Length: 87
Ligand SMILES: [Zn+2]
Image (cartoon, rainbow, N blue to C red; front, side):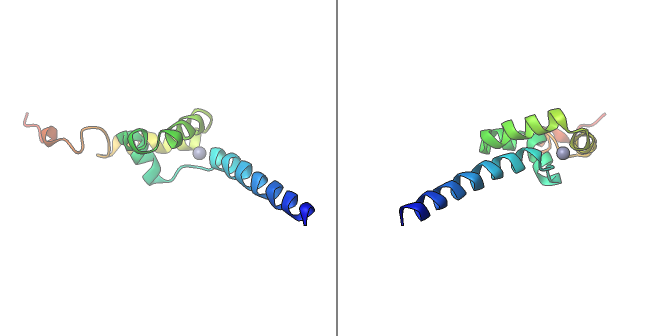
């Protein structure tokens, strides 16, 4: 029985390490990028915020997509009532 417990414990550890590693390399979804850009990730999940920053630091694909989101209306200020400016 002892061996099985050790094996299960090892598998659980491998699973969690694998999840972290895969999480770091996984591309961000449009929603995650929008949340990141709007500052919602930082507020709700600082751990994810760090992972996203690390990923964006090394992934041009996601940086390009974040640029696209920046150009769209999603971003800081979208929720603000001051968004409708009259020129
Ligand atoms: Zn990416």
